[in-house]
Length: 352
Image (cartoon, rainbow, N blue to C red; front, side):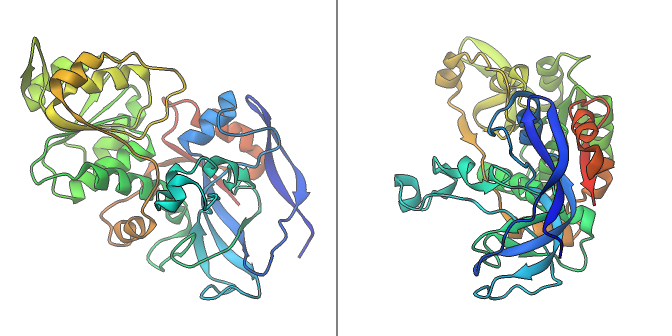
């Protein structure tokens, strides 16, 4: 094997260069994968556009599929030639949250994880340190092709978000944002026997993707009054001194300040709001709505890989049709620029 590989390296806002770097060295507990596909996550877009979450010199990319090409001498249960995906969460193991097994809340998470601190998969090879099957490495079943497998990580986030919302049969659900996460959240709700699932979005392309993926109704938030339209679709939800809509569950997968603000009007009193989108700008929140409507408010960070693999293998969630563009690694900057435009793209991937 050669000693160098091609990788997309971050140098600053909208400054991404493809260059030769050293292939990661594999220790006795590590594995190395040759990357097949890597998707551009919403958080990657924020990093590329503004520098959030990362520093100069970072190789991003954590939504990938690949083939194991090297395993350390101590690695058990993972073989060379196996198709897989994964995510190494570099938590400290000693803080309050790690001691209470709330690893996602560890302050070190974004300092030493795949694509955040550690080199990610916008490269020909990616290393998973301290590789453990079913923990930070997951084999890909034969029923899942390589492109679909690169969506396992975002599907895991979507599945976990829905799990946190604890939907009941017949719940009226509103998903705000129809990128890959929003589209998959909608599909997972449909698979969980929720009732009506409505998607709001400003991009016609993404709204069409939501229709194709099974949304009951879609709303173009750029052209319609979202709150008034939802009053018609899910009912009027009166609360102290005002009225909004009657959604049992609202998931913000858009991360736009307007969506954050609208979510408190859309949810019924005593309903649930989950935030999974990552806004670049702060939203204005009227806390009187929290007091008077008493919604359950959830921050959704993390994923359930096993649930994601099952949903994809069983065909309850379909993601391949949400991939709107693929680019070779040499055109990584063009790929990111395309992903930044919601009117042009749904999901953009690097293909190796």
